[in-house]
Length: 417
Picture (cartoon, rainbow, N blue to C red):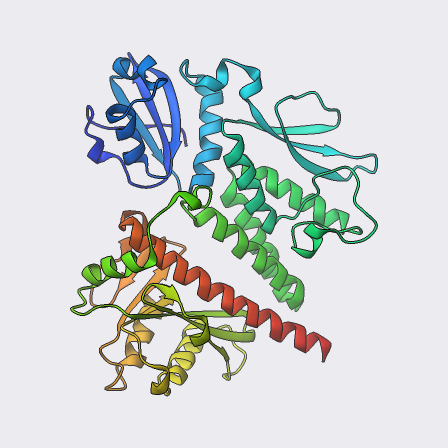
C-alpha cells in the first residue's frame, strides 16, 4: 500500500479530511512526505501558511499525492516506511542520524524481551523497528499499544508487582514467557503496519478457546482485541489533547444529518458483551447536553438462554429499558452493530407510543459505517463531519467499556462461586 493517489493540480478539495500520509512531488520525484490527522487541512497549511522549512521547497511542488489510513497511529507507521523507501530530500530526518527514532526490542540474560526507544542501532541481541520521525508521537503510540500488549521497559523487574503491573501495563514478576513473547511478536507486527494480520490471529485464538470452553482465557483475548481496535480506530488518539471539538457541537451537527427537528438533549448508547453467549450483559450509557451522565448509566444481566445471539439480546435489553419512563426517554439511541441491530431497535421502540419517535442510529465498526433510521444507504465514518465522528466514537467506546466491565464482574463472580 504505497501508491499515492494524485489530485488534479492543487485542487485540495479532493484530499480527504481524515488521517493519512501525503507526498509532494517536483518533476516526478518525491521531495517531501508527511502525515496528518486531517490530510486536507494539513496540506493546505503548507501552501497558505508555510513554515521556514516549507519555504525551502513549496514553490517546487507540482504534484500532490495522498494515502488514507484508519488512524493517526497507522499514519505514523506508514510515514516511517515511506520515508525510508523514498528518502525525500526535504525530510529533515535524513540529514542527521540523531533524528531517527527506533523501537528497540532487546533481551536480558534470561532472554526475556523488553522494549525502549533509541536513536542508535548499536545494542546486542536487539531487534529494531523504524525509523520513525516523531519521538513524542511514537512514545504516545507505544503507551496506548501497551494496553493491549503489556511489556517490560527495562532488563530487570522487582520481585514484587510494580506500579505498571497494577495498571495492567506490565507482565509482572512471573510472566507466562510463551504468552509474553507472543505479545511482543504481535507488538512488532503492529509497528510494521501489519494490524490486520494481528487482529485475525487474535480472533482465531479466541474462537479456538471458546470451542474448548476456556471462556476465561477467551475473554482475555476478547479484551485484548477490543483494546487494540479501540486504539487503532481512533483517528486522533495521539493528538487528542489538541482537539477543541466538543460533544455538544457534535450533537448539534447530528440533528441536521438525521433530520431531527428538535434539539438533542439526551442520547443513549447500547452495547452487548458476551463470550459465546456466556455471562451476557447489556449496557446503557447516557449523554445529556453532550456530557456523560454516569448516574444515569444502566447495566442489564441478559435473562434469555445462553445463546450467542446479539440481536435477540439487544431486543431484550431495549424492551426492558423502555418499561422505565421514569428514566426519561432520549431523542436518539445509538446501537453498536449494523443494519440488523438497527432494524430490531426500530421494531422495539415502535411498540410503544411514548418511544416510537425516538431516532435510531447504529455504528458498524467492521465496515466503518453509520446507519441512520429511514436512510437507505449507510454513511462511511470517514466522511462524517469531525464533531459527529468524535461524538459517535465517544458514545460507542463508553458503552463498550461499561458493558465489558460488568461482563468481567459476572465472570469473576462465577469463578469465585
